[in-house]
Length: 356
Ligand SMILES: NC(=O)c1ccc[n+]([C@@H]2O[C@H](COP(=O)([O-])OP(=O)(O)OC[C@H]3O[C@@H](n4cnc5c(N)ncnc54)[C@H](O)[C@@H]3O)[C@@H](O)[C@H]2O)c1
Image 1 (cartoon, rainbow, N blue to C red):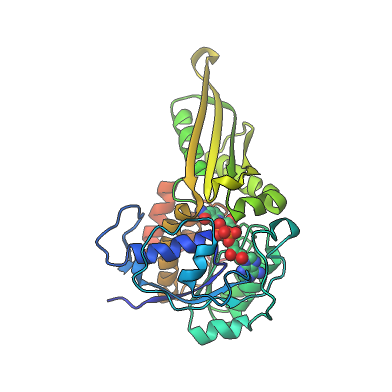
Image 2 (image 1 turned 90 degrees about the vertical axis):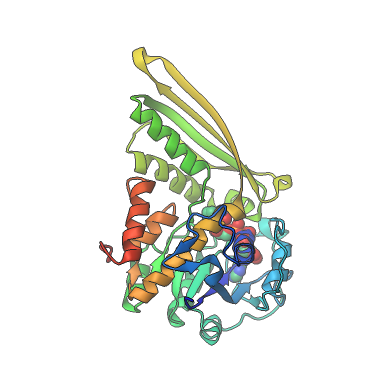
């Protein structure tokens, strides 16, 4: 039996809820439907153990994680046989909450724990950062606390950490892996957008213009609207144009928050191309996904791959993991197949070439 992968989660929101539910859902190893990789380097999803949890919401702090996740928009879809008896501790608020999101996150009136000491005391080896988009100061704070506690850091948020050369160097100098930025969904609008445009290009169609816009109901969409719209738009648009090397106007981003959608996201894709004789090919596609679960399988892979990085003694920015699981990695791969291949080689310990 492989040893457990001890993780600390910062931000017990919808993405954390999906991961925590996934550990329960896949625990006996008999059901692997919905997983990208049932095992990764011998690790199952159930080998992920939550040893520490941090949030600031008065509804979550003090509760065990399996209880705290009931406070999110994502429904609880599994029957927990055993409660995860890790109480959520109070974090450092910084810019985690803004006026517009206070109605969904009312901070607890409690002093923050010493976070680095807390991580150390729980023997966490990886800190998974699931803070809201735009909470740049808070994300940087927890990245520094992870370094102090000698933990690897996975940044699922769009804040630039893995793509920041100074942070990459700090993690490298401390002998720790760093992975990010901005988690890639298992199958969402960005992937669909890239796939469809790639197929059109392969069939000789000239892309003239395209957008992918989404509306969502989770706290994350609310945050995006008020303070991370620009960076999300930049990352999502770059993720499509950068990977496909086209110069047509491509716009991708979040356009509104619609509360009744809860954790669901509706994405609208519009693509205009020109075929033979300049004839139009026009597409209007809609896809609905659910944010938390859409990140769960990728998170499970990224956490297990980070454990492999720790076992291998890999330090600094681990580009093979970031390019596989994130929208804004320090070094992008040409396509998902190349990213998959590089991750597989990394897991096998070959082709490592990503020192900052
Ligand atoms: N499919 C996905 O879930 C997905 C995909 C791409 C990126 N992401 C990124 O993952 C992150 C988390 O997404 P989410 O949907 O779970 O968000 P969420 O808003 O549901 O959860 C964020 C949590 O962080 C807590 N928080 C806020 N400030 C804090 C602080 N200073 N210290 C500790 N906790 C604090 C909030 O109380 C909340 O519980 C976002 O940055 C999002 O962009 C998620």
